[in-house]
Amino acid sequence: MVTSTSSISFSQRVLFSVGIAVLLSACASGPKVTTTQDVSASAKVPYDNVLIISLFSSFDSRRYLEKELVNAISDRGGKAVASTTMMDSRTPVTRETFVAMVDKIGADAVLITQMINLETRAEVKDMRPEATHTFRPTYYYNVWSYELDEYVEPQGVAFEYSLRLASQMLSVEKETTIWAIESNTEIKMDAETDRDYSIFVNEAVGIAKQMSKDGLIGR
Image (cartoon, rainbow, N blue to C red; front, side):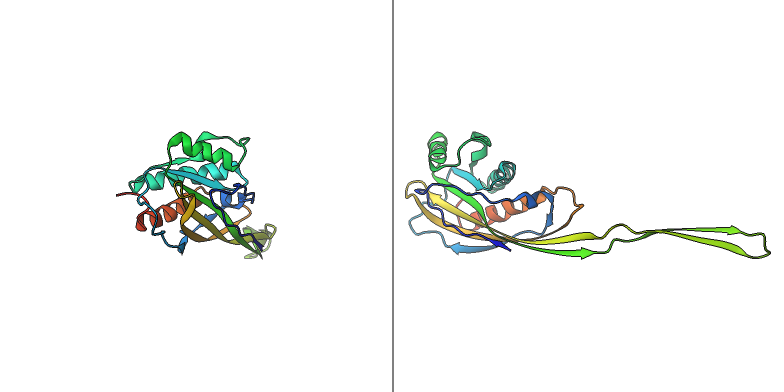
């Protein structure tokens, strides 16, 4: 089990490097969302323009999730811009980089999402055998020859992951966190599973749905 926790404020240097490649090859149910900080009384909701920041070591993972968050927020009447549309994999992941983005797009809030826990379980499983049967007559009356050929693949490995993401909404004016949630997802896969993009869609929909419910976006 790998566990990491951190709290990010807008005035701190924003650095986070945790592998999340597992998300690229899994099938998962929708996330269970839990509020960890209710909307602050000082929050000027709803927000009109949100900068989306995902903090993973994989730039592609950041780009995928941010894209789906922008889409999900837009579907609920909000406006958001993905940070990865204004940077590439070589751009420094620093406070200065994101402050410049806030100024460029005139954002009034920032949504930061990061992975805070990943539990992994693996189980060896027997693969299903394949068999062929052959019948043929012999030289003897009413006597048949029977041959069975059976092929058994090597054992496979099934994985289960418990993934927890933390999302924080920060007010640009106050430079403080005004809302926070955690989203938990159970992921099942095996070594032969093809990549499944739906994990990003599911996470984004779950996060945006809670944002809308709490009045942070939309009208």
